[in-house]
Image (tube, rainbow, N blue to C red; front, side, top):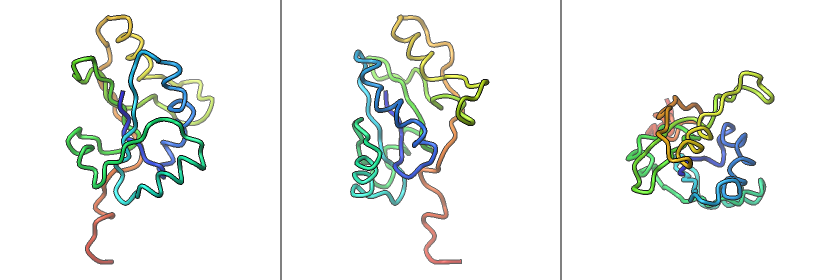
Length: 144
């Protein structure tokens, strides 16, 4: 499981607990986050990890090259891969709107459950929402 993630994305903060507990909840799976957001330095990521007590593995993707190859445009965006590294689910973790939302729908966990049971994943993709990995506003050559 791979999640494109950002230390400064408010949408990613909501999933700190989920991502910290991912390995414990799914010991049969590998998991890593990829920090691809434009302008985030390794020092900034380390600071967020310490302040928020993040324990999951985070790989740096300077310039968002890996994110671009995976067509990830925002954080968080989850990718569930099978043992041959084929993508079997990509998109949002859930449809989070606000805490304790009675209409909350999990997207990633049902895909993981189906995958681990050896049955075809019924929902292969969902729209994700979050913070832009790269935006034209990050790369303007000078102030307008």
